[in-house]
Amino acid sequence: MKVICSFLAAVLMLVYFSSCQKGIDWELEDIVTNDSTDLSKIVVLDTTLATGQDTLFLLNFYYDNQKRKSGEDFTEIDNSTGMRYTFYYRYFYNNNDTMPYRASEKYSFSSDSLISHLSYANNFIVKDSTVDFISGSIDDIQVVYYSIISASRYLRRFVRYDPISGASTSLDSTHYHRTVNAGNLISGTDSTWQNAGTPILTRANSFQYTYDNKQNPLAPLSLWYLGYYENFDDQVFIDMGVNNLLSARFDNLLPPTSSESQNYSHIYNSLNYPMISIVNGGDGNKALYFYTRL
Image (tube, rainbow, N blue to C red; front, side, top):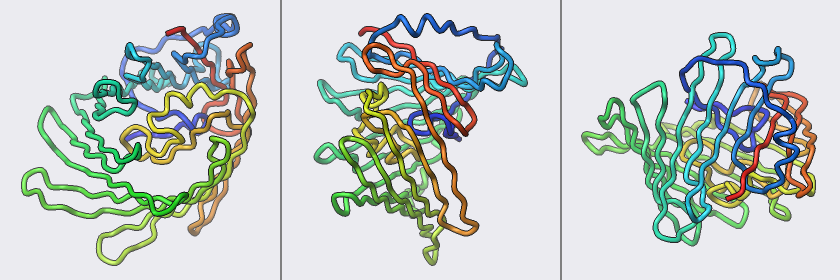
């Protein structure tokens, strides 16, 4: 349902919105002169495409009066058909809490929706109960449980509940190992086991990252620091750091094994926040950052 844009794998989830696509002319001066630290929008481009048809994704951020992230709109643009597809994410907080107790997901192209209720212990996500609605009726209930095994190891258990009988089915378990240095996720491994019947290893991945020493504008927008949990889908332990990625290597450890590497470069504003990011490899090869003052 959601696809990770390989260019902004650290930050973006793709979503879908339907409307007519028109060429977008993003003036560089609008970015260069905007020296602020509050991120309002990211535009992801494919510069191999013709100008006006090179916009792949749009990401807009919204805040409440306490400067907490209250929403995100993710839009994918299909330049071959001129269609847009958007997912709308909204976050709800109790009083002065910094982490939301509820999140919702809606779509411009469908009446379906999701509502997720979130539980914490010692500022760590321990439970995500998500209800899937189709045309206003409950279709599915999924609960994800999280636990800390050690300082660098975590466990996620994925359970589905029948909305009528309440019967539960344990779907899979994922073990995460993370190495963090100075606020940046440096390396890690993931292994997912299918729980139905005899446990089967269905996924085993590893990654390594390097960073610059400049400010990552997305770090304050991560709902849970270092991405222990991000939104309410599969982006658990997303690679979010306080600095900006310079290189990333991803390895699939199951046969047939494979590897993918990407290198990033950035142009910064006077406050050392990125205005432009460029990547070698991936769907989008250029990102433009727009800032506002809250």
